[in-house]
Picture (tube, rainbow, N blue to C red):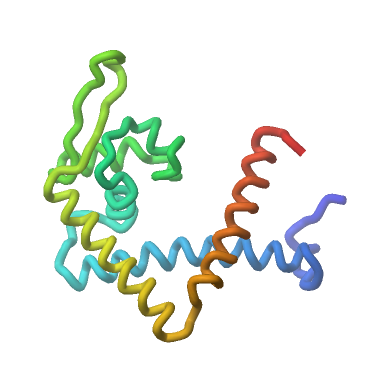
Length: 165
């Protein structure tokens, strides 16, 4: 059965409708997360790093990684990782150094300035986690249930990419 966009509008019920709602929600949540980070940085006057770059700095943390490892470790999903790394090095948020064993590869790590951005994002996330719980939006068990479902979806999609059915 092949579905077209017009067919999807008439399929609001059942697993397909729920799946499509989930896909749209995941996409919206990612964009909202970037907006939340952007707003926090604007409020603090940190305007030379964008939300994608700030999230990248947060995910790298204290690790020293290559650009390839950023994707394999799940720290970065975008297609323009080289651009963002170059910008972060140029603006002093990251150090870079050629690998001794493979001169083509470059290892990156955060500078003190990069760690400060990471800390801003970490503080923001800590405030959000506390607010979700104290305001009764979602508790720890609810968050664990969401994570379990999202991990299952991630495994399913990964299997689809690898042609495992």
